[in-house]
Length: 461
Image (cartoon, helix red, strand yellow):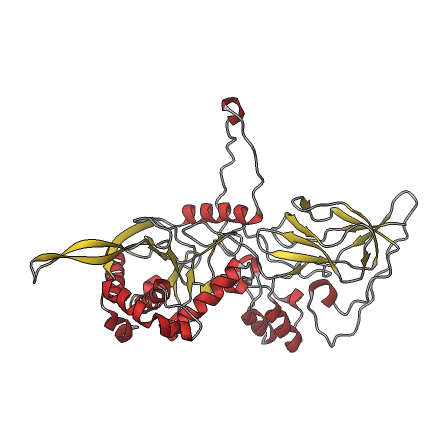
């Protein structure tokens, strides 16, 4: 008798997923716990493990299909008994390893008219692949920008627990069942801090986020009457971007300040000391320098390193300086986060930037490497352009946009002549609820002065 394998609960606020890979084919032998399906939601890419072994009789989905929780995806013949469950670890990758095994409830005996249904254990979250953003911003709120729902409730294990492998290891070490922990991160993602606070009996999650602004539901006109058209389904990444941009645009009243910096001396030093950085395994890029400059500016102007809590009418000032950097990849623009930028030298920042950019291009970024930023830099100078207005990544309050530098004639009052200087245009978009225009102008002038006088980078940074 064939056993139908159904898709498990994909997690809170996730109604469907896209099949990105089928890891088995008809006739294959499938072992209990072996991943057989790879899915992409707007939050992450995950593998679905088999609850029991057997022979694959029929694969009912293919790459590109959209599937929903409870949908039959595989027909399995000669299925063996499911692997014994220890607590809820098999369902979620978690649970207390020292807890006594719990009994798996027996399956109802199948009838001749209806094949047996074997529920799948919860899908195991993998490192997030391709959580994309527009050219100006990373996702908001959180990896998917999805509308927050009620906090996830502990269940029988048939749901996705949003936590990184390192968090899962910590939970096992501390004997914490992640099904009982409410995450404080985007989409209720559980952090190491949440696990430790839960172990100590403290609060485990932040207040609920405000509701997401709805996207347009106005139907499009019939373009086919004007000529031939074709339709292409949005990926989970693009759907997340649509929601994120709508959320940011409807939440934050944005203003953009434009300025320029003379980077002639800085460029000369960058080229001079570039080989030293390469010997240490990194590159001394202008983006690495901008990271250090931005960190100094955020320390000088703490209001730009803050967030607005409209629920409590408070401003949250952050003691850390974590800066997100937009990275152009074949799969779209990803924005990983460099942590503690203010505590690192420029060469070290160049090394870390190169490493995390490579991970972004290979789609190996973890969710934690895409979270926690207090400020964002989008450098499009390598592509071109003379200026743009980046979109603030809520709940941050500012983002720096950098365009391509070029040689321009600049008047030297002492020599009474024009000189060729390397001028870099940049822009700062900010949340006008917290930051006034004068604050933004001073912030931009500080950035420009740091770039124009390399000595200040060592002195102030």
